[in-house]
Image (cartoon, rainbow, N blue to C red; front, side):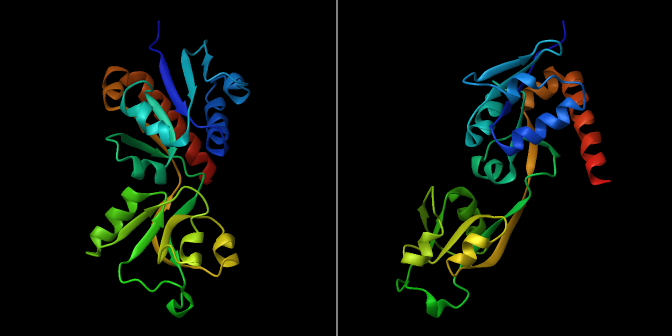
Length: 215
């Protein structure tokens, strides 16, 4: 019997686009596309198990070997700091991690001396500003991060930017790019050794699908 492969995914656009690629490889994704309340689903013919988890938990499941592979945004992957193999840029879900705030600091209500960064990515923020040799205070937020500079809680924010419309609506601008973000296929280090043939086959198949999307 072929080795079981477990794939960790978060519900939403990244999962739906991943299912399309997998279906092109002959994998049955009908159950995970319509999971209802189920969190564990199967393609029994190909012996592939799908587990549906929170986006921020995908790296955790893969790191601990509960899942062999996972699909996760580069932003979530960086913030997790988990020692995973990033094996493929799936190229969808593209956006940027950026520093944003008031382009004209005279518009800012901030008057403190300590430079504050509001973000849901504290690890990424610390690493980014450490690389610049700048000391910061991190304000960790999980919703409406843009409010930070607007109400004077922070000087800037570090957040995902797609269209930039929310920033513009609140009088903010992108000040610096941190990194490009897209969906990444990640692999457990042990699984890549113990299930190498099956995992390499999946990676090669998905790589070919991604190349077709670029044409």
